[in-house]
Length: 409
Image (cartoon, rainbow, N blue to C red; front, side, top):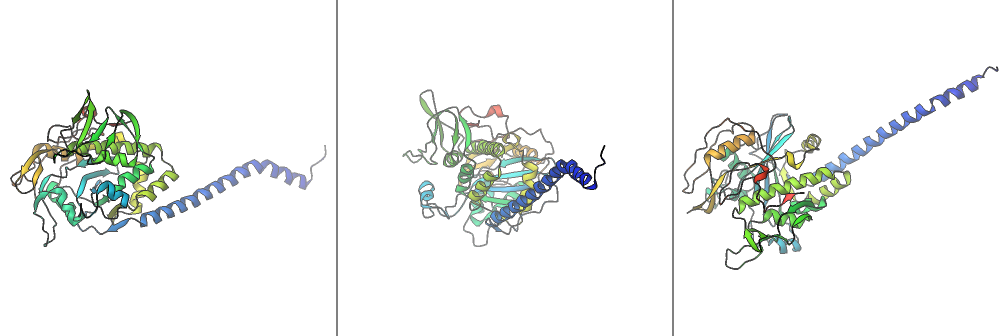
C-alpha cells in the first residue's frame, strides 16, 4: 500500500476538521452578531429613554440595593400638549385647566422575590395636603388629588405623611399614555358579560362622559381609545334584562376596572413580546409620561430582566378602604376606614407602614388614627375592591368581581 505524502496528510487533516471548524466559526459569528445587535438595541433604548422628561424629586426616598421599594404611578388629567383631535375627545386647557391626579396607584416592587403589588388610593380621599408652596391657594384639608396641582413632590409628600409609605420613584402618565400603549400592543382582549356605556345624568342632561360605548357582549379586542374610555368611566352602566343598570360604586368601581385593564395589558405584553413590538411601544409612549431623574435606564433594564415573565394574574391589587361622605370644606369626599386601612396597608407592604405625620381626615376634618398592625395575610390576586355602595374594602378574591365588569380574555 502506498504511503501518503505529507501534502495528502495535511489535506486529510483539514478535511477531518472542516465540520468542527465550520461550527466553531458559525458560533463566533453568531456571538459577534448578538453582541452587535445587543449593543445597537441598548443604544437605541438609551436614545428613546433620553426623550422622557425627567425632573428631580426632593421628597423621594432612595431604596437600599435589592430591597423592596415603592413607585408612585400618577394618572394626570392635564390637557397640555394635546392635539386637536385629543382636545375634542378630552376637552382643552381652557375648559379643563391645571392638572389633578386622576389616578393614584402605588406599585410595591420586591426584586428579591420577583413579586409586585398595587395599591389604589381613591382620588377623593380626604387628607391634609403636605408640601404645598407658601403662596398656594389650596385649602390644606382637601381631596388627595388636589396635591398634584403643585406637581409630584407635593403628592408624594402627602402620601408619605398620610399613610407612612416611602416613595422611591414616580411616573406621571397623561391621558394619552394608556391609549398609545394599548394601541402599540395591538389592543387588549376583554370579555364583556353585557353591553356597557358611560352615562352621566347628574346635571339633568345625560351625556357620555368618557366615551365608553361597547354595544355587544363577549370577548373582544379593545383599541387604545376604548381602553382609555373604560378606565375613565365613572358613570358605568351595563345592559341586562332589557334595561340599563348603573354601577353604584363610581370611582371605586372605576379603580377595579383599571386594575383589570392593567392585567389584560400585562398578559398581552407577555404573550406578544418581541423587539419590533417593544420599538413600537417605546416610540408611542416616550412623550406620554415623565419621571423622577433617579429612575434610570439601568433600573428599567433590571426590572425587565427580573419581570419579563410577569403576567396579569401575578399582580396583587389592593384598594384603600374608604366610605363616601360629605365635607363642608371639600364637598363629596372618601373617608378612610382606619381599621380596614391599617390591615390593607400592612398586606400591601408586607409589613407595617412607617410613621404617619398627618393622618387622614374624617368628614369633619378631624384626624383619624390608623392602628398599628403587623399581621399580614396571603395576598390575593388580580382584583381591587369589592363593590359596595360608597365603600371601598380590602382586596377580595377574584370571584367577587361584579358580574357586570369585563375580564381579561
